[in-house]
Length: 131
Image (cartoon, rainbow, N blue to C red):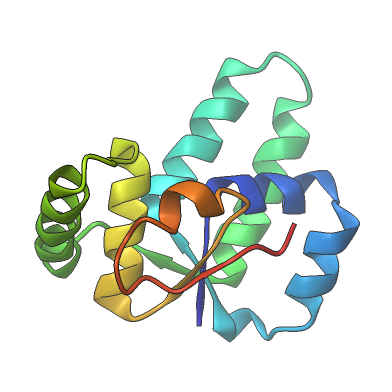
């Protein structure tokens, strides 16, 4: 199964052909969204003055079609390990990306992102770039 990062969901919403083809290759039950990504997308929609209704409809369709995973107790435990590991190597990643990585590890999901550089620093995290 795959946990879609914010940039991949953004590409999906914009109709990026490469991302849409990869998504079409999978059943909705193979794809998931984190509450962290949903929050980032909703923030972006709220902040942007253009096409809010259209964007809300798109993210609603996505969020109701695939699984949505919260930042729960399992993710919190994975977060602590990941953050310590990244700090010990002197290569931390953003707070939200650490949370997304933790959700993925807690659920044994691969992260689909165009930001392979950051997510690739997390030990034992499966990462794919569909963009």
